[in-house]
Image 1 (cartoon, rainbow, N blue to C red):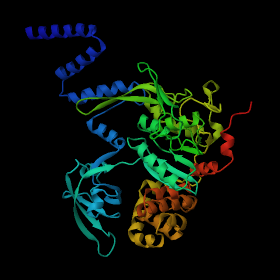
Image 2 (image 1 turned 90 degrees about the horizontal axis):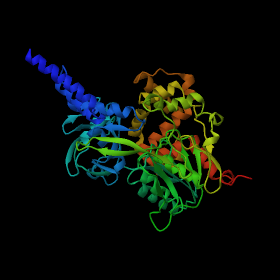
Image 3 (image 1 turned 90 degrees about the vertical axis):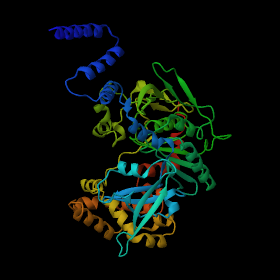
Image 4 (image 1 turned 180 degrees about the vertical axis):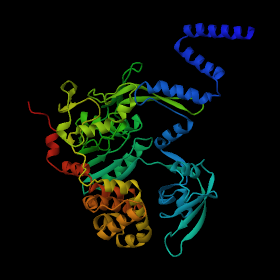
Length: 535
């Protein structure tokens, strides 16, 4: 009886105490009460993490929590390097296929070659085990200076395949943000940037200098599908395209006063602040990619070609915990030099609707037809040099719209791609014909201009899709998608035999955004669009 009375008194006291607590005290006490009195055993760490996630879910779509492992995975692509063995790879038929070895990296130094299959790591078979890429990468990566044993199958599919054992000493491996940089013609350069990371400025600077040595007078900057990255990387790159001391972007929030980020070249003067400039964007270009394209548009430095960008204009500040986990909390907005808020509208706590925005754009026709884009007069501003009308409202709207091209896309193509058949077919073709192709086309430009994916190759692809991957052949849809099949097969073969830029040299001959960018940069329309409006 006394014990029961004690519990009742304690419960009543706790109720009174909780009613008088501040919000943060209440949260701590709630966690303690659950941990102490809940009927079943609870994982206190998971309980706290779920509470944090629950709070953040009620805020904007980009505030987030990540545990220690997730935090490492988030940061690694932007840091510029990691410790590993130095390969790029694909999983083909449950086997790790080496696409390329990093020049001068650990794998190249021990003699590993493109086309090798890694079948075991430290005596653990990985071939045929249906392992996730993330698990395999954990096995291959590790601290600099440590070793890993791998067993490789070379000349797979031939009469005499070789099994070779390598001991590889891990080293720092660069993560590149420039996928390709090449001369399209004698005066037009092309640079493809996939993210804005710690070394992006140095990579872009090197690419510009290399292209200028080859005679570049005008540049196409490809930011299609670029999901962004570091704010500073975007500001640094703008320092090479704009005059010194220009406003690149500013940030401002409730507790974060306005801060102006000004352009400053890496050297004595900008590398490319004169000469025609066209920036390619689409609906997946976000964050730092929008800062870059927005500033170039605001200052009339160049033209934006493609589709309206994603609209990610919220600044996240990292708040790390001592266990390696982290909260990335939105603290401000990004604004372009004209004052446009890059962030598209959102409802707090409704992440599902936000995630379906791209589908909503498709349904409304925005991705297909320029006249489906609705501009709001109240969000109209004028560019800073020429006074051209441009619009806010979320994302950066292009100066020249290029619709999403679905002419060659079919359900059959989607199914063949989804099954991984195209990648496996390209790997098999390279295995059988690498030396032959290299002999016939010594340079990748020879390959791009001369190699053709013929009907026999397409039939072999279709047969493989049906017999091996269960994709029933559809003659009408295969014929409609043939140009797309030919392009992607050729691009993958070129990438695997030569280098990553070869992929884009092939792809750009097909890509409508690139073709319009190239037409525009060599047209009088460029000057017409970049001119002050008539009074």
